[in-house]
Amino acid sequence: MTGCDVKSGTLSMGSKEESVKWSLGKPGRILLTMLLLPAVLSIFVQISGLNFLPSNEWISKAALPALAVGVVSAALPFWLTLKSRREIDGVRKGFGLLIAPIAGYFFGKHLVIIAVPMLFAFIAGHLVELSFTVVDAHERGSKKCRSPVQVEGVPMLFDEICWVPENVRRELGPGQRIAVSGRGTSRGVFVESLRRVD
Image (cartoon, rainbow, N blue to C red):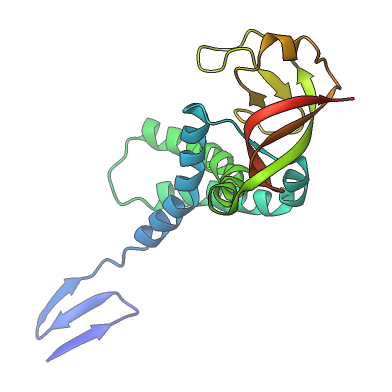
């Protein structure tokens, strides 16, 4: 007759005993993937050239939830690395314990601040106009983002509007208010155009 001792984690079959390993890591890995994948995808969307700006109002409202998700996303990879049953040498494990929580926090926070409003803009977006404050409009930019206008209060990687015409940039300076139009919601917008607000 077969019996199962849940407390000891063993399965007894007659006189033979076989050790059963309960995999606590798999649900953690699934949860971590669900948390981080949308944030990673939102970064790829931005890098691909679709300029998305979360609204300052959303960033302010979502600050506490973003912090909570960031902490959970930082704790999960730390816990998974500690509980890993695979043989990991000391250097790699130490690196994982140091870097994984930082990356987890970054992606978890971006999930709330960037990925959620981006998803709303994709699904329920309509033509909107949101206001932002210019930080810098005279940098040369990078190969992927030429002639950018940098805006205030938006997380790094998402704080620039790329390929702004020079005649528009010349009119802008630090502290200048701009209105950004495009497909989006009150939470954020895919930038199609911008204008100076006097």
